[in-house]
Length: 277
Image 1 (tube, helix red, strand yellow):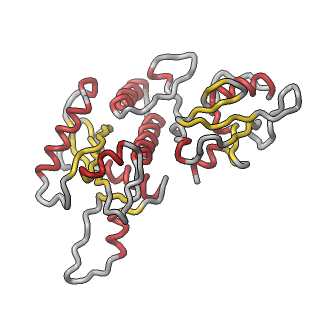
Image 2 (cartoon, helix red, strand yellow; image 1 turned 30 degrees about the vertical axis):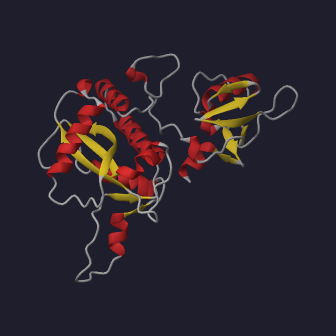
Image 3 (tube, helix red, strand yellow; image 1 turned 120 degrees about the horizontal axis):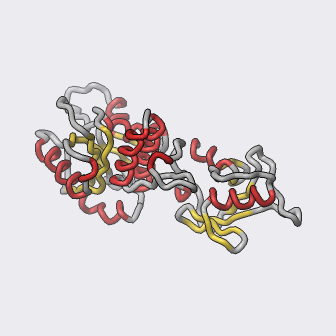
């Protein structure tokens, strides 16, 4: 994209026969000939007026105008996301999928492994293999939250907040505030479905590795029920709300906001550490 635009749209598409599998968040494997292709196009306009249909229409113009799309089968757009204008934003998302977060296979990596043979035609750099939809959503969420953290003023934060809504990304807020400028500038919410199974146990600590004990000298445990939610002592909640309650009750804390993943551990590791791994 050589011209200046207001925003960059990143589109994700793949084989039509894999559409249901993608939306069911099932793994698309290279061995089965499954993939997603991630590309980008520019967008001129007001972020307030952006819809999924508009982003898909803009993406299709870009895809249809490519002289060499490298699409071997009938395909459909799966997802579209929008960001502040920046060339090679699609490279940023692919890097998070293939290097920083999940180490997935990708065509750029495979191309580098090929010898420069006379009759070898390399794939385009945009293909990603071994991916599922939640991986892509988390990579987008990660980038959105990095943009929030880099915002220099309240107006920039408000724009990024609107972008998060367009991308269907949850916005973290201070529990006492409702304005966009109260966005918590930290890493995105950890997608616990990627690392925990239903019934897995987590244990509350004081953040320094010491277990928090209740009035009966018993540790405080919670059990994963899916969707980033847990059951703890007959109540359901997320790590932050549960940690806040029991740290204030038994841990000698007086917290108004809390990153619960810093206090709950799974098999001896903080949930935030599992994010990095």
